[in-house]
Image (cartoon, rainbow, N blue to C red; front, side, top):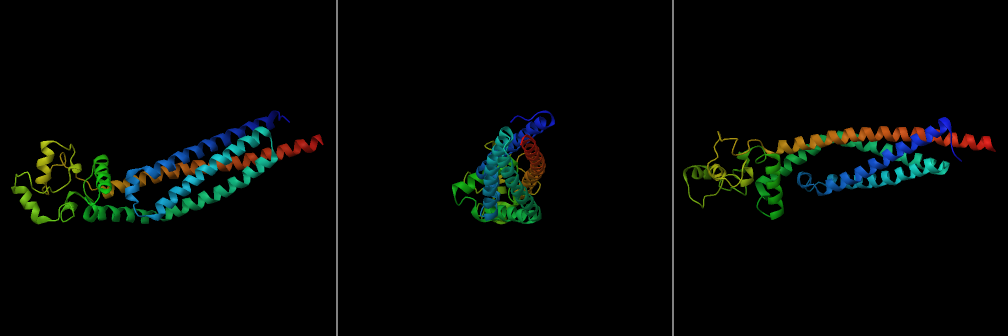
Length: 266
């Protein structure tokens, strides 16, 4: 059977919407895989079961969207009521799940920010230098986000990296020896490895030069990063929901059109 006129236009419209839906599913698959391997976000969410669970749910959702989008494309091309009806039901279930998940994520934003603050503070004070993975990851965060410490560079005083605290700060100011304990890690420097960086790490004062040592703490930087990602997720989620709703409406209209033509021929 080949649909003509308005029905033919509706058929290709449903196919186009399902193609967009299929591409969105592929995009979510790629995004979820990226989230599983993004070092900054993995560090911020370290020890948080909700992050890992949410990422895997996103991965499964992307896979389902890919399969269902393909199912809808086949249903539109083959003009199959069975495939279109199955597509409609699955799409409705996914739409309800996405709305529920979006509402849950919006209501738990404060918990996510609290988790980031506690993770960064615990790393600076207790975990930095204990293992290479944590140290390398946090160094990468300080360099890429251009930050230092949890609140600021003074967060390193009294930490596992600088256990002498304020007492050693005075030693660092007056000493020029090679064996002096640095006040902050090298990754806090704007330009690591330079003489200015080496001197500033031994001589960080309250009025330090922000052109040498990063002034802002990493907690606020990571919170801004998560907020930015959350806004992206929200915008993409709203767009996908609109495409899903249109897909449901037009697939049902196409299904009804196919049924009417079959009844007319009978």
